[in-house]
Image 1: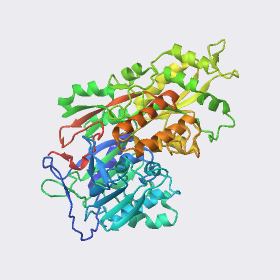
Image 2: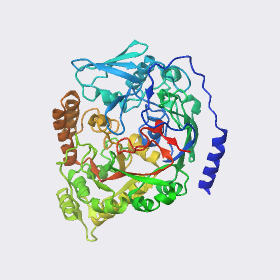
Image 3: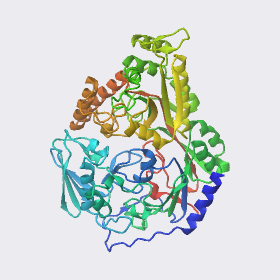
Image 4: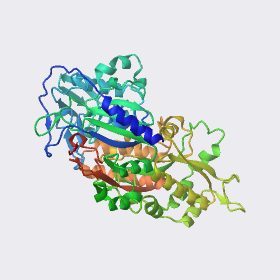
Length: 575
């Protein structure tokens, strides 16, 4: 009944939606022109989202339920990466220069770009964005990534359309950092000055207040139902005829309860494309002609999935559950869990064969930086038992695993509800750990609740979750160095808690400050080896990027890196 109600509300809304913006009289001097076939302007794109957003504030968002709505669609960076080649390409900056010593970056902005409310985008917006990110009172993990030798870059406005960044030493990932999303000064400056930035653009905000330069603007949000986006009529990209993109007028993103709901909607012809689970791929492939769609297997994704244990001494439950902290910080215990990962079964059952084993924190398709020689933990329960014995654990007369004090090993494992692939993987992990005599309470929970436990409450036992991954290893500077906001097992350490974490801090500094790729590879290889040896997170499997795409949706080119929507401004619906 709820699904029917959602669809009814969407159709009613589509006919009543209208957004008007008053644009400044500014000429766009540097438009980007599409080289793809001319499309048809108009139409409504319908897709799905798995879960509600937590915020529309891109600076403080740390979960994909939020960034899947805002990033690249509402907000953009000075530069971006091409969805197919992964090469850097101009975005809000039309060009840039780098000094010979690699310490000064000068960006030349496109003239005449407008925010979706019609105000002109200028260097003031860039400066404001980095002022906010630099502010220690703003909880953003972007600040971790931007630091160079412990210092935030110096930045200055040269003129209305030129900004300059200066860093203390050559820093190879710096250009990648300029994919940071820019926010409007004219909408957020007063709130920031008043110390209220962290409360801005929450999910209850009037959508007209959320202003970006991207191809779409948020027009409406109904929790549990849908997010509706409309084209930014001021967008700076143009079709081959010189008309403003995107082609799509409206983009309705239905919030689905589960991956089964997403699949059912596509099968009923209610959505235009679907990220297909491996278990559904062959079934969907059989109905391509009848459903007027085609299938795409884009290969292994850049995303990683892993199990993380709570090793945070600031866990509010630590005093009453010190024993769990002792278990989870026991290297032999974590290695035993690693040996219990039946990845073949995960691939066969959860991914239907469309996936691969993951051993490293670097994404599988990243052939430049992936270290394929790290320590691995092939499925072996006998090895797992050896590790548990070495860690001081034993089994009682009922074959229950107990620690050195005779306490039975029991803990909770959670993942995000509705993601049936993760739910299946969680069940497989729990089943194997039970074979080792552990008592496992495995429960899927709502994604934003899971993120709160992981990022701010710190009261979980263990979580199965993932990261988006990417091309540049330093993008993980908010995860792997000990001070990182996303250093999930023990975040935001004032000083490294262990020698191996201190070494990772050092390796990330060296990997970033070294320009030569060969040297960077050596540093990041060692980082991957340390993670594999110390197993602060335990990797599972990587799914293939699979899609079902309506034949009426044109100019699409799904890839493992860019996914489906990297060039959504060029997508159009054939009449």
